[in-house]
Image (cartoon, rainbow, N blue to C red):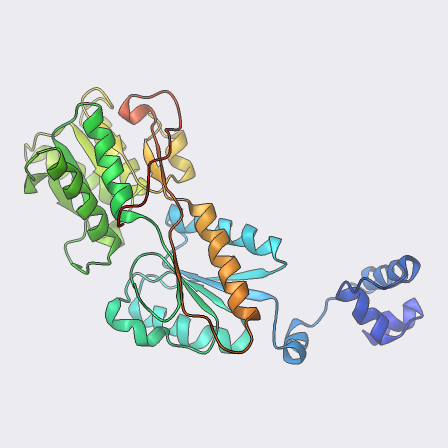
Length: 350
């Protein structure tokens, strides 16, 4: 900064004002400082600035895995929302491992982050004490309710019910579910909530639950391979079905592949619907119907809430929970050419 000030012929304070975009700097002075910055390839020391201001301008995002489409697209949405607030984002993968998730909460912020957006999959309701931290923290996802932090989640149960109702509306009655978690019966687990939505829709239609249609897939295998494997097994066991509800789109893409390999036509023989509306679902062949849970809105709300918590002074407000609306997106895999359906009500628990 001393070198920039010397070349521009101004004080260090003026250089600081330009760097921090202070409005009351004459245009000619600002131009000279910016030219000197460019000439020297000067980059402000964020660590030093953070020590003085208490902030670094960087927030964290901890997700299970960027190989999973949903979390990769969520990270993209968070980064774009943060850029609008002048913030950078450091993304961390936890691998969905309990120890890594606990480390993300306990060690990331004290060193160089202003706050953390955190999407856990291994922590549960019993771990709410681990979320009681001094640093600003906003929880993403559906694992822990009623905790000490703001929570931005989705309508898992009611959105899943809407997906199954869509299959019922087009005349399907033997509806398989792929993605039930055989290892985790936690009532706040996303697989459990979506399974509950599936059961609710069938019961309301007077259809008895057939457990042979509920196919287990560990959440660590909520991917194409997991969806394909579950579909192959179901067919080879001789289970009759005319529709599949995949608990996320990536599972659904695997289902589409397996059905093709088994000689089943989609949607004539089997209709398929997923969950999350990842970009790839629009471009699969056939394009896959899905539920859009409001990923961009989730990201924007989460960033806004985190910024408010970072800026909060004095007594902290009680934590709040936010659930953006969802919409059903009907595509070729359920017999529709259009890419959007009217948004469904989202007032029911989910």
